[in-house]
View 1 (tube, rainbow, N blue to C red):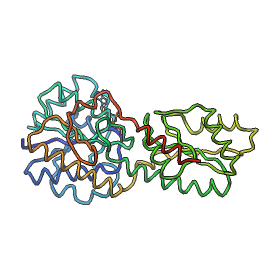
View 2: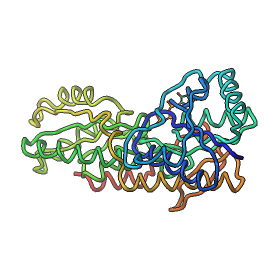
View 3: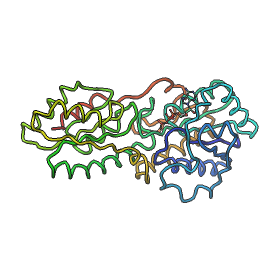
View 4: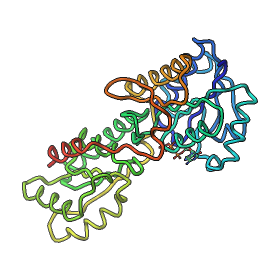
Length: 324
Ligand code: ATP
């Protein structure tokens, strides 16, 4: 192995550049060349790449986004385009590919590994933190901190105006961000898709809180449940006679996945990138980098295929007990 391919795929997140840097610098240490493909799997299909050397990744560690760019590439679901991607890699003399991606990217990576004679490594990244097989994915910590900072600010208004505020956070179908942010901000109610509770329970919680003399509340809502707009309309209608005032909402959106990565994300991204290349050099094939019980380990790439990770029920219960 002399040359490895590298790409970032799916949604961007803070920490990708730190991981790219770690892969390139570790590869350089072992005298390997890194071909960085642009815009995820699109770059593989279109043969769009640049050679990344030690110097080319200087100054990117602390930057959000990805210098390799990223994209969603529907053509990769078609075998013929995956074959074209493989042939492009083969023609460049690349026999190992590192994919920094989320669940979808891992599906594509796994197909590539099983259909062709190619060594494929998955490094987990997604602010949703829902990749099966690993307890951590790059970007999650920064997203939680970004959301926490925003909610702390919203809370000032919530308390001063004695209001109820619904804050919608990202996570696609996953509730990890909402759950952690709910704990970190002391949210009165946290609603996530994995353990949904019925509307009447939310109403009861709000009324109970008011009866106990608490005139404000933050409801953290995972986007995978419903929109904050819709929930506020429903609750405003159903609670209009309860004297709790107008329920407002705020959608945090893309600010959650932008900006400079936290120290934790920089460190984890660096460790993941280093580990991936080191294991490749040691001869390991078709694996994903995973974080488990405080250790970075490798697992078969196919382990996450078709599965997602869901939050621990204990964490969810903790959130409910500490709220209100
Ligand atoms: P994130 O969770 O951060 O959004 P992701 O990797 O899950 O990251 P997706 O948009 O789901 O993001 O997938 C990224 C890309 O992976 C897709 O645009 C596509 O190119 C490829 N991909 C996804 N699913 C498949 C699949 N079933 N077969 C082949 N390729 C796939």
